[in-house]
Length: 146
Image 1 (cartoon, rainbow, N blue to C red):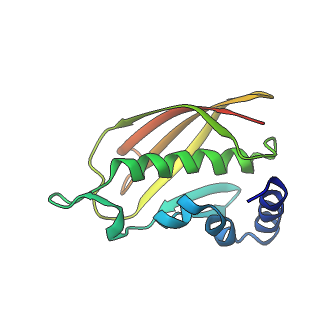
Image 2 (cartoon, rainbow, N blue to C red; image 1 turned 135 degrees about the vertical axis):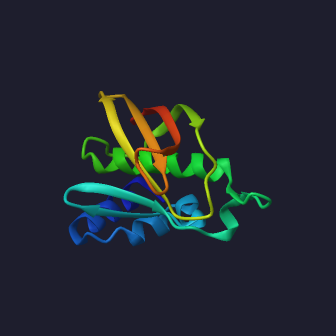
């Protein structure tokens, strides 16, 4: 997807409040089934449970890479929605702490922009299932803003 196509997709999603087409335009978000909605001015991200996102079938538990990829996309979409970012941010570094096993159920995520300059953004991320006060993963990341 070109920069102009992405920009148009974001503008359409913001105007309509329907982010489904945007999620479908991003291959990894589409593959894992990620959803996004805006409620009371806040972005809400969800990874609905899918059997294909299970990594350890014996527990069963969500694959750590799926959790990490979900959080990376949460950060990218949050930065894009901040109106200060005009193109898709590029990951400089991404560090994740897995705190609990991801059970076979929906996963929620949020991103806090700690600092956003002209060229670099620093974010903190959290993923949880039943209770936001009991995260299953937290992450820190830096992104290059083109």
